[in-house]
Image (cartoon, rainbow over all chains, first blue to last red; front, side, top):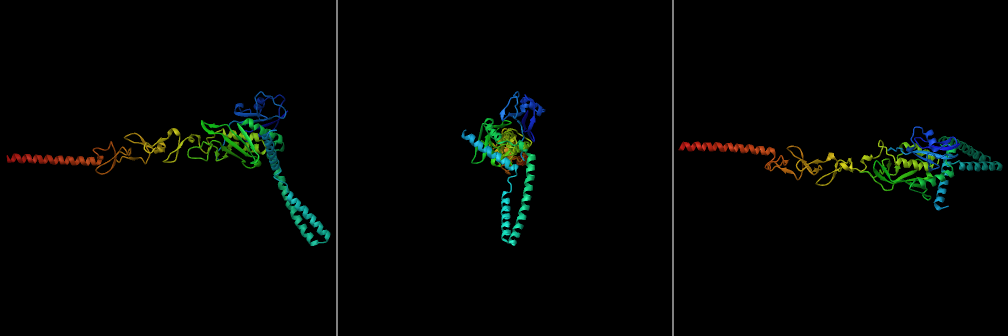
Length: 74
Length: 338
């Protein structure tokens, strides 16, 4: 099935990705952000708070936004 | 449907238009095409009437307009290609997605709203606390009619907690109402270009909730500090020293303790003993009654500075010697007369 995956880390990524039926939010996170820890991200499905065991559906919009994004002074 | 939802629908429509409009690089040259059509019609009429010179002139103008149109269309195609590469059409938020984004803002933030007249969407963050420094809430205000412009949003401190010595920095990474996006810049721009309004506000909120000490307009360590009235440096609150006489706020480098009483004083309220060089306040200072030199109490003896004291002592010794000599001569003279 196809879901819209958005990663707001660094340069960011936004695109449709194929994933198997029954994939959970946690599984997609581990697959797409293997070096990250889920508790360091805001994880939203269709702009709503999501739990790791929530099962994704066709067309869902999943976003991962880092909790820490450093600003600057210049 | 309530009034708020209707406002959000209108806002979503306008945001979607902005994204699509930029995707086709603002506008097609319709005005120039209408001018071309008019010229062509005029040239045809002149030919029909036998006005060959007029027709020739009109055809010259028509050729120029056609070349200009060709140039504009080529630039437009290049701009569309560039925009498509940066933000593929299939990744642009649809009208429905934008509307859902706007509805979701009310659940993500304590406050969120839309001002159609002003063309703004806004959210208010939770109170921001960075390393135990409270900075208060911030309002992130997006001008949704300029969503494709450079930084079309402001960050406004709701209860500003400015650092010592500066009222233009309400947050380590905000100057006046402009956020320096740092590592979030690309993510912010990508979110705005594709109409991901929910992501935009979320990213900006996370930027405000993160401290980067390596690149801050004002360091948090100096946030609750005080400006030294002598040198202007910012001093952490727990290191501030108050002059015991005038109560001015000082850094440790600009205050000195009186050698005699031990209290702290600023440069104006103290002096130095001309003998030992130690700092001494105006209350503990003494002036030599003979030469007027300023000395501390420890260096003052019988209201004399050490130099004058020594001179006085020498004079006294000389007097004592003279007295002894006179006494001795007198005694000798008396013995002789007896």
